[in-house]
Image (cartoon, rainbow, N blue to C red):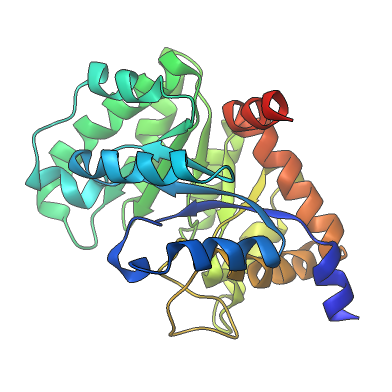
Length: 273
């Protein structure tokens, strides 16, 4: 029965890193395995400005792959602050469908907190101006993250997904209250993630996405191994359990959510159909 449910499920991996060296020499096979597992689309994420050409090339070479452009908060201290104009220029590409990932990481790079906050506000401005969703990385910075997202929303609406959400319930509520989305990664499948699963269970189904964050955070039963987009279906299995749905129904709901948030990707596929 599980194999039959898998065969009916169609899902989008809303966040992965296909340009990372972990996939060197086998990217075509990785994408083929994703398709075989029911993954219809992937969004590969740029984390450094100098990597944008390589990330863009992957999206251009594969019909099912889109990309997002931004500067990861852990990279902010190592590179010049990106400008709004730079973000807007890249965002005009037909397959660039999101802004980020941006955000705050005080766990590893608290010393650059001020620069991270400046960068985040620039990314928010780009999301607001382009209408593309902001993709947020948040670690050990819940209070500042909720404050900045809320402050900036007061200056003008924008859309957003909290990528690989693993923060606390207060940040989840702040994001949901702003109309934002929470993305479920392999962390939600780990045995000790009961509190995180409870946060997802309390969220509206129509605000949930699924991702791998590949090559990181492989879900059960692949924990500890290199992650890849095909494994998104295993995170979706846990999501279906959380919401009391069949796997195909949960996957379909997250597909609809992706289309609603990543409208440029949805429009691209419809135009190509």
